[in-house]
Image (cartoon, rainbow, N blue to C red; front, side, top):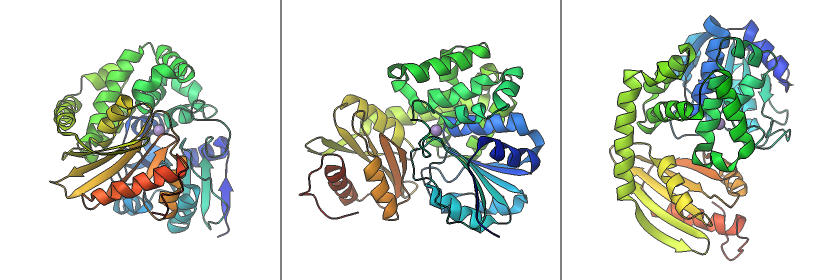
Amino acid sequence: MGNEIWLSMESLWNSLTTGSVFAVFHWDADGIASAAILLKMLGERIVGFYPPRVGVYSLEALPWRRISESRASVLTVLDYGLPGTAYEDLSDIVAPRSVAVLDHHLVEPPRGGGRGVLHYVNPVAQSLGGEEDWPATSFLVYSIPGVGEACDARRCSWLAAVGIVGDLGPVIEARPRAYGTAARLAGKSGYSLRDIAKVVELVDSCYRLLNEECIVHAAQLLGWASGPRDVLDDNRLSRAAEEAAKALRTAMDRVRYLFQRHGIIAYYVESDAYVTSYVGRKLAAMHSDSVVLLLHWAPGRKRGFVYARSMRHQLTRVLRELRESGVPAGGKEHVLAFPVEEPDKGLIEKLADLVERHVFGRSSADGGW
Ligand SMILES: [Mn+2]
């Protein structure tokens, strides 16, 4: 089979509406909301539905057994942030099935090296807008011609708002355009951003508990819900949210300072929940001029995560170097994360070296990853 790359929303949507679809979606509120919109629009065309392994950004983290058992003709990947070349590899692996990617992470777009059929729509990677224009993948799905109108008719525009509120979190107030978009989308369905924020907190508790079945439950729940009320009344998510909130509080009390260099401050935390992004965001808000590094170790799971975030500085070049060195890191302009197998504080020192070189231009810190 020859290489085929399709870059338009229309051709991507055409592939989804004429095939049977397996949807792989990012484990956070945006990925879940994106999958829920697809479920609302495609119904029984969706023959399978699962997130990658939480905290890992690589093709290996995809739910391979489920994908091969599903016999879907199209594999769609939502909001997962892998570079374009990874999806070219994926289209080779799953051929003759096609791959349809919807994303808004700033990554390298595909270059035309694959042999399978790849539909790739990522306006940020394709330089068709910035992260403020495309604040969520759920909004991108909603923006596919015809989908927004159909979604409005089913009063489901609130799902697009869930992704925006989830991805921007507390900084949404500082992004007036994205804030306005989210408020307009929620309002179209008759809800406020407060309702949406509550939905985000509930669905994000699943990945914090590293519970993939809970994530699937959340996506199905949102996909069939007539509005936020149905989500807020769900017992399983309420229990998960209580448990996650407890884990987050405990983790914040356990954060330990590691070291500081000019413009960089590093911390360590232990928790068996995926508290990485929550704790990292809080620390980044406390040190808004710095780059915050966090090593999170989950002793009971014998795995951990390294995380970096900055309110002010761009981490894009650090993320690129990590990925070029084979690290399964994911992220956006101001954030990156990757899994680790040991609580090795040396990794944080090495990451600090990369940040010094790429963010602060200090060449004394030499050596790659
Ligand atoms: Mn997203």
